[in-house]
Length: 313
Length: 262
Image (cartoon, rainbow over all chains, first blue to last red; front, side, top):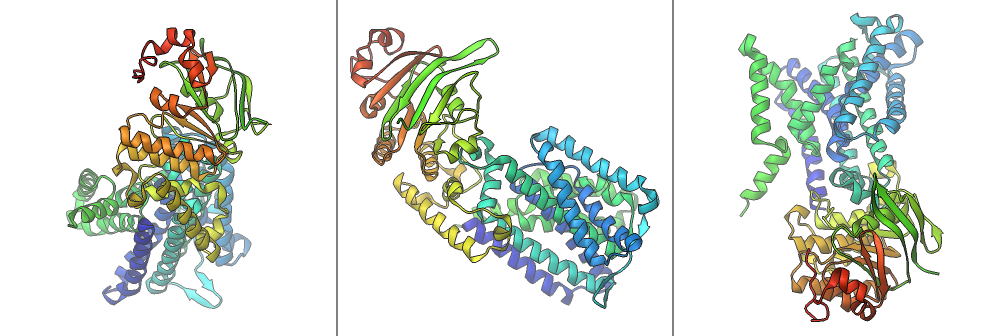
């Protein structure tokens, strides 16, 4: 319950930040960055349901992100489906795929699961590249703008609010889940699969639940990015993107809802901030990540929270 | 009808016959101890009947229903619960959350209601929490409810596991060395809890090295040696069984100072 209260407080804090941030953001460029942070945080939050709560790794999560992104590109362009409906269809398709793929591969553990999900991600990226008539192949394709019943959502400001509100809702749902029998089952599986199963928890079912949910979060985030950018390429679903998600989740803190947002913020904002280092940008970014992981082992948010608790008299 | 019975169970790992033709039956409310030297197959037996290992031969029954080969979570749903010799506590969860996980089988499940924290889910959470608190009180750990499990002492974790197993409201409770590593006071507490649980009609199957505890609370004792049944009977019968004395207990029990090594 204490943990649940902390989690809910974290969600409140996030909502307040999203609400007040526009007061201090000086230009559309910053709104754009914030929007990217929200979109990535949404995907990372989904991955965190799987990795941080249930303790199952996925190195193919960009695959689901890509399915969402291409759904809002291909659907409206080729089949005349409205963008919002294509977004929903993409989320459903990603969830369905996760359900079908998850049943066999979630029996695997640790490194084996990592490689299996990696393979799944590569396959999705390959299909998106090769179905060139539909997807534009390696060059990608333009994405029609989102039109919500006459409101054309374009530019940094509207997208700031769409992605921000979505992220807040997604975080609220995740916090609710954490404080429910499902959330407790997932956390139990993370700590001891043996003990969880002898208490009556169907491991396969709950791992699959987390996998499907995380795929849906990922697909919605992917759709948002595509609609926001107005362009998709196969890199959207690529291996590096998957690694980026995992890095954000681990850096911010596995199992921490606020951690997902902090991790996404860091890895979206830092590359922008580090451009002053020109050629050395990536070296500095790498060093910062290493230093964070060495000193804040449990990830930024959980480690700092633990420190704060210890400081209290 | 026995609450729990094992018929002719054998298991082999490669060439090693870890259990051979084990049979016994436990009545409702009975405290049934399984003893034997290290390597006798006690924990293996628990792992078989809780569904973690599949027996190479034999069957076992809960309330007369054949439950052989069911996965652990299905066995739990049939009323079988257990604790572990080397603890399997959810270390990153608080004490109370650990026990709340144990209420899983008695909660309603549906991801969508959980996601939206519908009023019914909140009510259920409160009920689960209240029940978990009762169980914490039963094992004397009310004051540690919000403590994260990895910050608890060994004896507390042992009791936490018992409370968590009880949260499933089992018909059959398998306890793997509940008193191992506990001091005299903690052992007495555990002893009290076990007797209370059995008095409520639960069959308790106990693996334990603390002979004083075993002799004191068990209705019947089943002795294993090298994967085979050596003897079965009341504590008096076991205490005086020449084969048991020769194989395992030595003179220690008759001297009254019984604490088997290991």
